[in-house]
Image 1: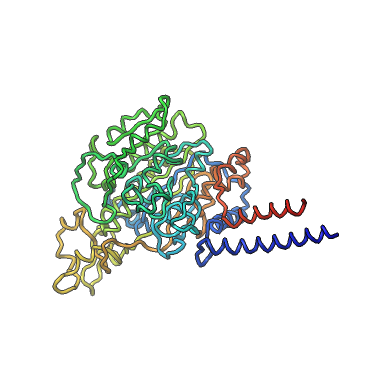
Image 2: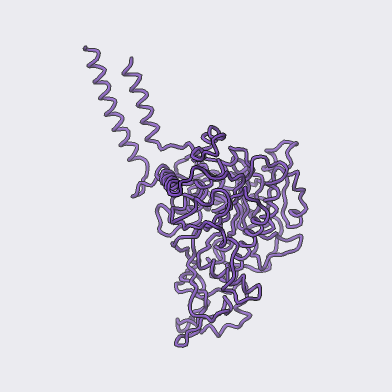
Length: 554
């Protein structure tokens, strides 16, 4: 009897210790006011998935062998509408009646894009949500929102990891540098998105984070990708002599030169044995000349910094390929004779956003039209075993104004008789303010004082209400358009981090593949592929329960 009482005392004491431990852990780990840590967002996405499955009485969806996720960076609904008009006008029509290829996709939803700490997000936090299934703080890449920035956490795994774990071929294509926020979130983690090369990482943080370029070539899943196309040779220590026809402004144009003297392109090749067919290309001509069927891995870096805008790029063989050409080549390589288990490809139209930031409305909408061409190419090249999702990471603060006459130049002027002439496309924030406001009177200059040739120049900035060096993003929801196996899971208004859970369910990879009955053969493998990160309090509590059990039975 005495021994039993002692065991009860021990039991109660350990319960108290467990509770105290939980309180201490909760006070140590930073929490947002909404308690929205990694576990919260994963549960949120799973709940919405269960809701959709239940509402449609879906027992399973046709398995998607391949997945292509298109991200139009900064592609707001106003951008889509203006892009539709421009496409029609380029085809010598009025324009308004045109249709973008993804607008005919059978399933459409809307995604909420805010970060855990900001109403209006940035690309790092939104890309993390799109690829890992977890929303995070502004400026952070691949990090749990409950983490302190100086905590050396493992990166949260995402769609590229999940696909590689199932032996799918993987790739990323972007018109930005390959280390920029959106592509970086597919393979890296960093407290700050600008940790792109070693000189951008503060010395006191270097024990916690490698720079993003090193993570790409040294660590999985970056070094395991079969296709990497984009810009950013400077950031990998592989610069080439390059002359651009135009010089554009904005923080996105600032480059970075490595201080560690590493050439990471050379380091990239060192990881492969002689039996692996690996290629490095730097021009459009070199990319086109690739022997598609024999390639295991290809790294294509087509510029020292960001790639050139579509309308001003060198279209010769020594120049840079278009987004459409890169997308076409990437699909061919991923779907070559070595493709047995399918592929996952992320394609970003990244310069839409960067043009918007500088109020380059013409460039932004032209990039939007090129982005649509790349989507059309993917639709034409793939079959009904491919899930294609088109979305944006966030919106932009460009406004599509009234009341221009039907068929008016989309880059022209509105038509309200009792008002001074104004542009159809204007911005709420950005550097366009300085181009359109008189230094003498501090009043807007009549738009008709600019000649047609001035307004058609790539560096012409549309007017802005509030002066800023870089225009801001916008906080409204973005469109999500889907076609192919699993596309019917895209419906309603949902949190952005739901999208990778659709990919997981439909393509039998990652954390919720086991919920799809058609993935049953892959369930055990898929569970291994899922992100197994658990919050600290759960693991410590489980450990204490084990100790408690041993004490009680002894």
